[in-house]
Image (cartoon, rainbow, N blue to C red):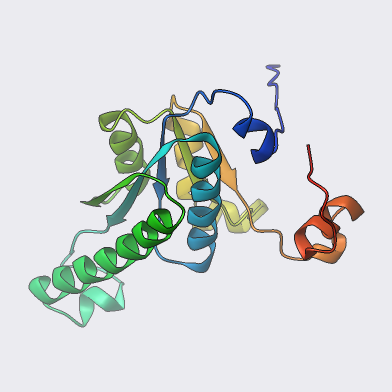
Length: 189
């Protein structure tokens, strides 16, 4: 049985020492959860002086599909809408990074296998870390729906930071709940 060491370090602590991460890849699809991960990655990059590579991966048009977006549109219409949507997502992420003073680039790709494209872009852009969101699904729903994050974790040779949004602050440990609700000026170290 293999053992893994998991280190939990606050962003504040990372900011006090040289970070091993100079470039962080952040995949985004514009969803609420993905936007949360973008914001968290920007905070990490701002604290450590890292740059970010934002990437979106669109699914190519298929003639035979169950996707209503593809059924209702011609190839050209579908691709134009997807490009516009991807550009909007990347623009929003870039604006947030600029406001935080974080250097960034954006990459838009097409692929049937988003996880492979995410890993490929991370390698091409010399990233040392991939930071991405996860719903935290378990059991049958995880198996049936699959997960781009799980596939990146399984296939990437780079470290992957999985960001999950804390849904119910009241169930968090007291010190963390206070920090998240803004009731405390303490820093978690």
